[in-house]
Length: 149
Image (cartoon, rainbow, N blue to C red; front, side, top):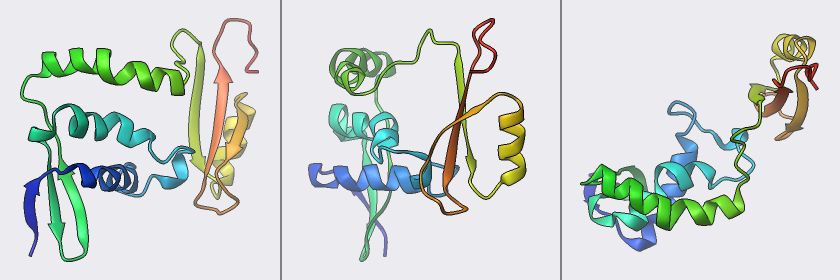
């Protein structure tokens, strides 16, 4: 039997995990992110830490399997994010704002797409692993005169 209950601080790591394993349109996004907490930093943890009274989890005998987050006052929550949440993350993650650079990920097994992106001037940044289902990250500079490098 699944129980819906209020968030507890000990649930936070589970929220991060659930966010990651459902972060690709409901599928596992683990292969898409170097930092397994990145999605949770954006979509789950700020609610749990700044508005815990509006976070609920679904739990059964096997543990937590889902969550729902919200904030009773969106403007207040956004203001708190700007003062209490984003500054700490901005020291950890570089802000790409203002850089005319596009990036994408494609499955390592999708050779046709990889050839296409390379032909369009994208350069490979990294591969999560050598598995065919792993992500291969590409980037291209969109600045005028950059020539795709």
